Structure formats: C-alpha cells, structure tokens
Image 1 (cartoon, each protein chain N blue to C red):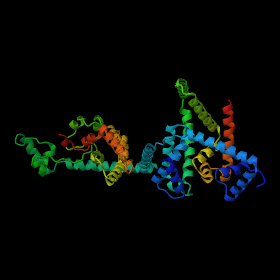
Image 2: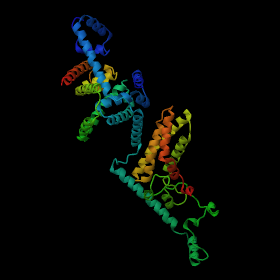
Image 3: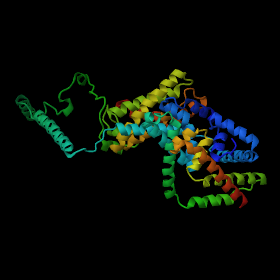
Image 4: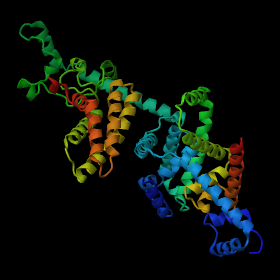
Length: 182
Length: 304
C-alpha cells in the first residue's frame, strides 16, 4: 500500500492536487521523514499535522513550481527541527534512565538475533552521526526523490546534491567501520 | 573517458541521475578501469547498507487514519479561528463608538419598558376599582393578564426556544441521559441551551441515530452521512468554542463528547469494511450520547 501510494505520488508530481489528494499522496513520505528526523512517533505525528495545516493555508503557493513533495519535505524539515529543539528542552534525563533499565531487564535472545540487532543498532548510530544536510540527502534519496526535488526540499544547489550524497556515503562508511571495530 | 571518475559523477551514475551521454561514458570507463569499478562496487555496497539502516529505522505502520483525523481537526480549528470575528480593538475610537451605541440601545429599551409599564388613564381607573373590590377580581398571574386564544382554551403559550441564562446552566450537570435536575429548574417549553445549540444537537441526534440503526447502508447513504457529519463537525467546533467562551460547562462537555464521533463518521472511507462501521457504532452506543442529545435537544414539556 505504501509503495502504491509512493508510486502515485511520483506520477502526480507536477499535477495540481487538491488538499485531500495531496494528503493521500504524500502523508507517508512526510511521516517517514519526520520520524527519521525526530525519532519519536508522537512527535512525527505532530509534525505531519503542522505540515499539512500549513499546506492547507498555502496550497497554491506550495504547488507553484510543481514540486509539492519537495515543498512538503522542506516544511517537514523546518517543523521537525523546531519540534526536536522544543523536545530537547522539555525532556528530562528520566528517559535515558528508563531506556537503560529496559535494556538491562530485556529478555535474553538467541545469539544470531543479538548479533543482527547489534548490527542494526550500529548502522543506525552511523546514520545518526552524519551531519545535515548530508543525512537528509540520504533520507530523501532513499524516499525516491530526484536530485531536483532534494535540492528544492533542502534549499541546496542541485549540482551539489550528488556530491553531498557521495560525502554522506563516505562518512557513513567511515563511522560505521569505526563503530564496527570498537 | 580517460581520467578516473570523480565522486560526484560516479554517485550521479549510481543514482540514475547522470545524463545519457555521461552515463554511457561512465559505463565505458568502468569496463576498462579496475580501480573505478572497485570504487563503484564499494559505493553500491555502502548505499545498500545505508538503505538497510534507513529501512530498519523507518516505521513499518503509518497511522494514516489517525493522521488524517488529526489534520482535518486541526485544519478545521484553524478555519474556525480565522473566520471568527476578531474583537481586538483596532483603535480607541472604534471601541468608544461601540460602547456609546450599546448605551443608546440599552437606554432605548429601558425607556420603552418604562413607557409600557406606566398605566394608561382608563387602565389606571380599572386598576383602582380592582383594588377596591379584591374579592370580585381575584389576582391573576401577570402573564395571563392578556390571555391569548390558546390560553383561553386552557393551554399556556409555549415559547419554542428560550435562551437559558448561563448561571442556571452552570448548575446543571452534563452529559448524562439520566440527568433530571435541570428539568426541575426550567419552566415548561424551555430548552437547556440556546436556539442554535439546540438545533445543532437535534440534527446530530438524527444523524447518529440513523447511522446507528442502518444495518448495511448503501454507498449513497454513507456519503450523505459523511457529508452531514462534516458540516455538523464544523458547526460543533464553533458552538463548543462559544460555550467555552461563555463558560457554559454543560454545553461544552456535551459538544466535546459529540465531536470525536462526528469526526469518526466524517473520516470513514467511501467503502468502509463492516468492522469500521461496527467500531464507530460501538463507540456511539458506548458513549450513550444519543440519549443525552435527545434530552438536551427537546423542550422540557416533552420530558414529562
């Protein structure tokens, strides 16, 4: 269903959509990007809500250059940044304590599963260490955006997108390798 | 292409973003340069690992229904906010003018009452006679001094919708279909809330009742219910805000419990699964809101 919707989103990019159509076509990619930036499902939902409220207010302007998805993701990045900033202020140290306790009391798993989880965790940490806008380039590339859309979403030059992705990739390999060794 | 590939060109080729001529040159170069071919393989492996990491991090389930409900509710709230008249004074003259106009209206109304209440000469005389012979003219309630045709037939005239003072409403408790206390403080024919709210509750009651009773609604019926529900939802938000502003706790509470149910109906897909319908119906039944709506949208005489 996700793939279907994303494919639809690609085919309708450049066509003027009404608000409902825009929501149906793009809410998934907005949610996934918001989640990747905030790493908090609740916060990601807040971000999606705010992004689409803004879209409702600026539906015409958002589609003026035919890059609605890029516009949505640019707003998603801005709203997520503010949301994370607010959350960091509000969050206490209790959460890390709870996470630590959960990890400590987690049931034992088979070795293979533990190894796989460790690998995933390392890859995630490597991904998290990549700086912006390189990290967002990777995320948006993964979501199937073209260089043109990525450039519009992140406010960077289109000719630099390939270079940013290549640097992000090198950075990932460097950090992932380092974490793997340690 | 004799020189080795730079990172940017290689990446654009791997991402399918290189123009056709550049892509052709890259392919030709990779066929003859072992170093660049190894770099390309390494880059592909790294991109696969990155994709895997992103996939692992991405949420599997997207809460579409909840997101849609939240977005629609937020959009409607913003619409209501933007359409509500702003009472922020733009300038002091506007405010002063409003106060002066209000004072004039109040003075006019009071003057009219004073003139009406002062008895005419003949009425004054009749009143004098009546005072002298109280037994012959037993005192009547004030409202029956000018009985209407219906009053003469032994029925009292019922005002259809009467605005209830906020202070009285605040004493009633809501929302519960078994609340009988408010009826005791209301006179016959009055409604608990103002005209607009009562009409709204009446419509909501009809919608919820018909939705709940329809065993397998057709697509047209469902589309109609959804449309009505959306209209009512917008009105509900407005009324709830009014109730909040007027500190009318019972109305606020009732409208507040009605809102999610209207939202549920409005957000149903065009062809919902039977489980979706049953779930909304279950929520309506569980909330017992239809009974509460019936109580609060009916003039008090019907409650007897």
